[in-house]
Image (tube, rainbow, N blue to C red; front, side):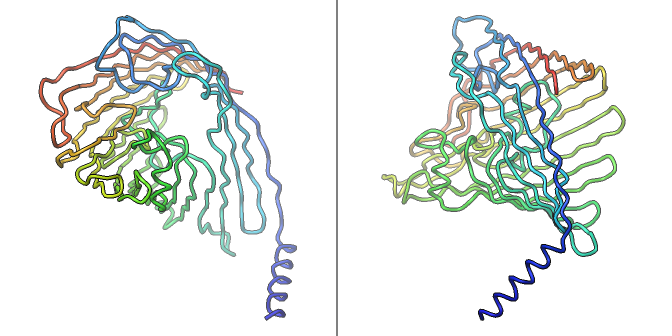
Length: 399
């Protein structure tokens, strides 16, 4: 046995010595980006009121509210072109200054956005076998985004999450590939009795699982994906299992681009989608029974131009409730409320690109329809529409 181990080690060392190594090229970049916006209504939004979701049902007497910030300015380091034998490697680390602000007050602190290594593998003929991504990166359901100016990139009508993951992509043919990923939670987390937390996934002991099918054509891109999440709100308690499916289509030719995505499923709070789950039975933390809420979200993005670029975004989401009788707490995503029936958004945008400099102007119209939470988690009663108009300007210099 000892001789066998030594022989394997010697063979491994010989192959490593024979393999040719190509060093990586490293590039440092980033951008300085400043946003200015004004809202006609109070909004449910992220830090600095910058990451807008939907208008609040109860409005204050503040009148128009405005904000100016450069905290989404970004730095990154990319390493590309490394090769060792039949394996290639690239890496990225990226940060911005989005932490440290509460409301509109505070000091912006450096925050990790992405940090991952992507390994590519080839067979002896030089044909691609697959690639392995390890680290923190865009969630596979959130990787495809519209072309809007706003930092929310269409949320909550589309998934938005960067998360720790292990992701494998494997080609099936020249145009078709498969994706599988095991996913953890960090910044974007499930809702629950302690607010947003990764502990519910930790309690469940099972990573979030994603499976996807991708088709790439000359001018087209199509994706179908399935996401499964199993969490435990309480240690030793029962599980909440939920599933999400999505379809994405993209067409690009010349200066024109059309993108569309639709998502349907349950408990999408960890993806910045509308959703949550509710207690439907039991009397203690250990024997509570749960059911997830169901919702749908759809968006369309049309873009044309280069120096002058016009974009039109439209989004719609609908809350279908839990379809069971509520018998206790109903935990819901922080970017919405459980008495919101539907939300729509219409966003025209204009960009002016001058070399490395980009100027943008956008009008974001978002309407939320509020009502009365019913026993089955649906929303009815007297419905009230709350419409916000956000006017937003952006100046960005990329280096």
